[in-house]
Image (tube, rainbow, N blue to C red):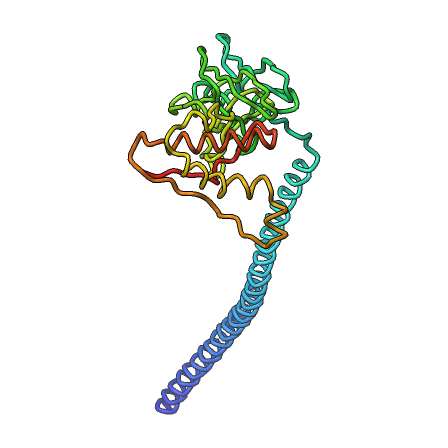
Length: 314
């Protein structure tokens, strides 16, 4: 009986141990299940966050693309605006140029002590002011200048290349010159700056500007002008002695074709282009040429004679 009681106690003890173990296993399974549920919830949260972040990244990429496209469009708009601005400025400059009042040309004459200048405008001498950018000392007499609407000098140009051709008769004091115009009219003109350093001689051809009364350029003489005698020589054939034969030949060759061209034309005679006189100095070549010119002038009643018909050579 004692053994039965001991066995019963051990059995109960074993059963209690099994119950406790079963209970602890049951409690452990519950804890594991609870932890698994928490992990599942965390994973779900992380998955949702990842999806949200992916969506945000996609939106960011899309925004970045739109921003790049907008930036390119802005650059195109800026370039278009700059081009339009440049065109507007060009058009404005053209409009200002087309609507600006005409400028006046003048001829500079001299400087005054107060810094102003004297210019000729359409034949009138005017005292005008100079633009601050113009160096007064660089202005030269006879030089062209441009005046604005208020008749102030705003630009300096060169010397005019056109005008009247006159002949120098004499150089006067005070940088002046006595010149001969058309029809032997004489006029006193001022010497322009370019002629102050030139060597001038009586008979030189000069360029005359009637607007300012200045001669501004020395012109080359033409070959034809060099053969024209301004005055008929006061020499007759009677002043030449001992050359009657030569005089007769020259008169036949020079005077007859000049005085009787119709007869030469009727008989189809060709007039000589000239006569060449040669010989040592002092033999009368120049006197014969002057006598021929004088005789032709007296016969035709002219005051100037072309001397190309009779030339002399040594």
